[in-house]
Length: 438
Image (tube, rainbow, N blue to C red):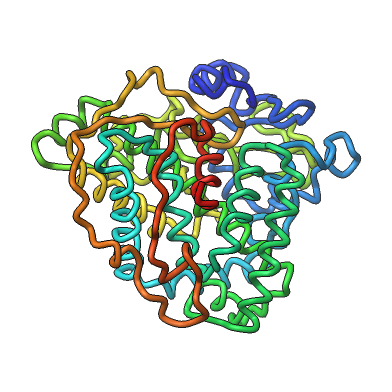
């Protein structure tokens, strides 16, 4: 599941695996064995039965005995961290409660306004060029701007956080990337303890759950992971669908933008995190005639489950029964915020540049390899060049409290560098170069 063949056509792989039953053996990375859950019913059974299937990866036999080395590229995505994603029972409820309560303090109107202003800032950067890579120049950058605002992240931390998270998702020296991400977040927690602000990091610190430093750091890891890679994929995959599918193109040309319908379609067919929600049987279990051994990872294929032929209806517009946000006690606690960010990002772009066209045929777009995400490598488009009219001073709102954030943090005036020929081809590398001002 880590090669380019899987990335280019995962649906074909899911069809082959379904012939083996509701779960099938796979290799996530060289030497990393798991079983992939491909049926909708089996996925719901695992996700909703915490008394049998645990999330805590300290149960993972092959990691515990050294069969899977710590420097395996998938380990940072699967290893134990003291946060809500990798815990069970009362510990999970306490850690999740701190996250949900803190996110509930984010005002939707403030979030919408910040996404709109950030989107305008990014669109201004390429609007006069007549061409852009909507992944590297828009979908990847916008969630980072929003993240930095919501979490009160100073600008000088931005480069390190981007580098660390990108290394983890792309599996490029993932062990080193994980260390960089962790040490940077430790510094952020120390900063917010000394100088709290009106941001999610400060609210987590002040929560009655009394998170320890390591719990704070790894709660931020899971929030940052969920707020960057999946968010950029939802935006980019939604734009891809809107620009290539005749069902939506006709509505677009008529002046109506069925963005919500397109997002529903993407969440069903190309969910941003296609395969994840890893669980571990607490004891040997026989499911549908197959032995699921205690401590062996069960990876839920959210994409395969959503496209299970056993599902009777193909009506996806307005249908929220998909598993893109997972299900059960570990379902995503920020669904409304994630959907709002994606919808506003897409609507703003199509409003500013209504005549977008893909530069290449949709079937020639490349997908980034990796077992977990459904991620484009680039989304090149052309459009009639437009004159930039958005005032630079309106690029971001002033911070409500806390220290000055620097040139790319909350309250910053964004002076974005212009795109240069020969820039890095990797989307994450482009984003990192953008943060460095290159």
